[in-house]
Image (tube, rainbow, N blue to C red; front, side):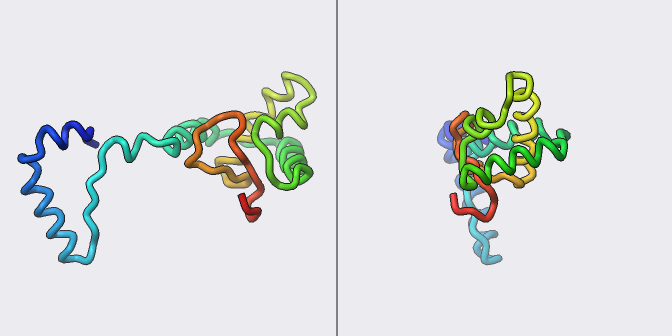
Length: 131
């Protein structure tokens, strides 16, 4: 991955290489696209790193059922903050439910816009429902 400033600094050096890559791609019916760090450092990457932390977390059946029922009761749409506030009995319960929520988002049992910046008010919904 190169920074955009690197491409500009070495533009002449890379010109022949990019021309060859473009020709190679065109011969095969492909499209060559040059990407710099601005195409990678997006909210989607932040979300992927965040959700990766929950890859080994498995909600209990009771936690899964509580979260899904509450989300259905909210019309299938909510925010993480609203959903957790609705069903958590206390701070300890909240701390137990939050990882389960994100595990369900990671597994696509609960959907969210993974291109949206992470925040407590990021919309979540049941898959199959329109956002």
